[in-house]
Image 1 (cartoon, rainbow, N blue to C red):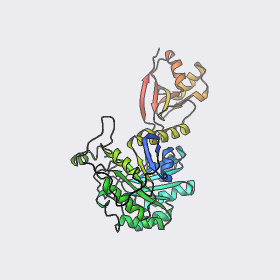
Image 2 (cartoon, rainbow, N blue to C red):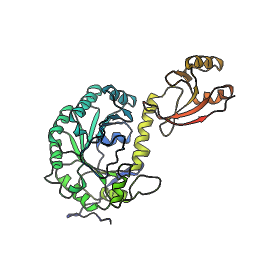
Image 3 (cartoon, one colour):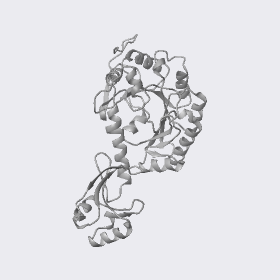
Image 4 (cartoon, one colour):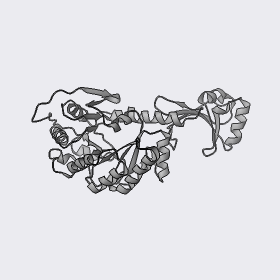
Length: 371
């Protein structure tokens, strides 16, 4: 059963604004969010380990409670991987997440220092944590963390004052960081959510971010056990979360409240980051699609160098539209070139669609008609 927002004092109707992907906010967006909307923020997953035990945690089995690190989709094996991924997308900032980054504060601080040292103070870094740890917080502040998003569990939303989470908020502000809360919009908890926003505002919070609750392979059983259900067959969103978040944004609170729907993450955040990366890493023989993937022609070969030279001469292909990929044993061509010469080839030729990630994960391939 859903409850309406309950507050002790009346509030004025706020001016709300929309973001792409049906997001909504009152006041102003946190700086980390403005970069995210542009697809300009690298996601740095520093560890999958977390001791909070949130029943709604959506982290995948591949990462959940595993001490692994990822820069976007790239597995981090050394610090250079992080810098390379940031350069690939010309990241303006980094969002640090997990698991919980405060489980490994020294590692997280090293990554912050690494990014600040390479890209300068203007490289904006925000961090998401559900672990009240003042000592770790100071380590991160000394390393240059710009913004923190604190995640109090739903059990304390109505009694935020005096908790370790409030102390984290107050200390973050004292250390010169921007600080706010980031939590899921849990259906049926409108009143508790309102209590939390009012309390956080009184404690100095500068924003509250609400994420649409999503069902994943790791949290589905726990969510269903609490009576939650998925919204529809084409979304992972949980029924009622969208409405809860929108009521909160429109609730007239004294601090900015931002709602980030699951469709924003899928259709805007990821797509804009892929587009940004693709436009940077593409070579002249690749086309960037609307979804941020890359299209190219591919001819498989055990001797790609020799075949590339032969094809270039035979079909008078400009060098900027053909190249050999020895590691993947193939020749890559501009897709329009591949379509034109395919009838004259005896080998296997395809139009290939790939993500612009370091691994160049293949999305789809379409065979072209050979001779």
